[in-house]
Amino acid sequence: MKILFQGDSITDAFRKPEEINPAFQLGNGYAFLVAAKLGARHPERRFEFLNRCVSGHTVQDLEN
Image (cartoon, rainbow, N blue to C red):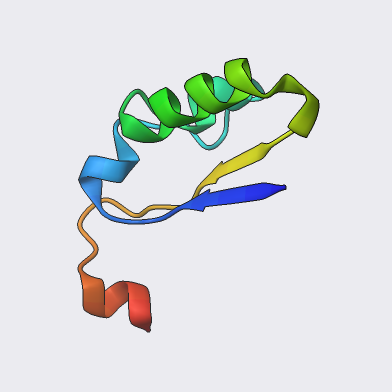
């Protein structure tokens, strides 16, 4: 199951999309915390977490 996080700088949380390690791709904010907690509670579900935020974007940018 894929779980997508998208948003602005709060969701971005200093993520490093170029990193090989998926933990760095999630940043160090709530996306990482949610992924860590869900992954630890349900390892059998094999979640895939994606953080595709863009720092500085607004809700209108997300809709476009």
